[in-house]
Image: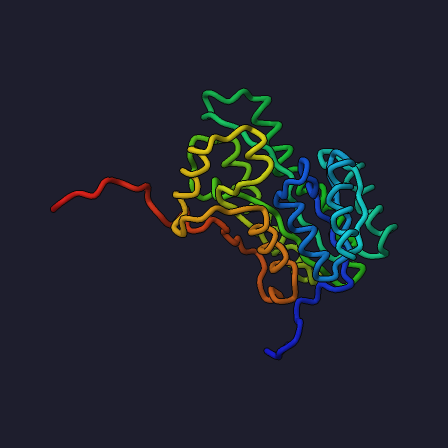
Length: 270
């Protein structure tokens, strides 16, 4: 493919599963943003969420804009339901090309503080779900000649900060991404990762973040601006598209420069 003035995204007519594609109310999280942006590029989308109503709200937004989407309820911790999710995509749209893994939960504390059951739950939801969705999505992609997967990690995997179970799980997502890229490159399947920074999404503001805390997060960015689900969605759309056709096994950090900057300190005269 040469560099011509044309739409070389290759997204039109393809089919994507967005796992974790719902969001509370009218909010736009990482998954909902990716689903809407892909649909705007002509991709047919199966929006998946544990709560059908949340997935349907995203699908309804896509349809209101003239796109094609269906909603499907899936508990991605269940192997059987992940298999049924892929079957639903094939039943609705006849093929599968892309998978975007957005499901995750948070935690706080060190290995001393964290209950063992919380550690296991974080690993199950943040890592095992991506293993399970991919287990069934990859064979379907192979039947259509290949595809692409994006797993959503976090900058916490790169900059630990008192969230040990969460940090470890998100580091495992990066390792899983690289392993899958090696395993399935021969099948024409690219696998990449997005590591978001402190995005302002429904998962964050549902916890009642104060204006002061929100501003502190904004100022942590080199750019001094606030990130949103749309920023992650744009990164996902790029990595799934043919514009990223020679990129696999990589982690794209989307954080406004948070991870390249040391904490601010008071200026001192020398």
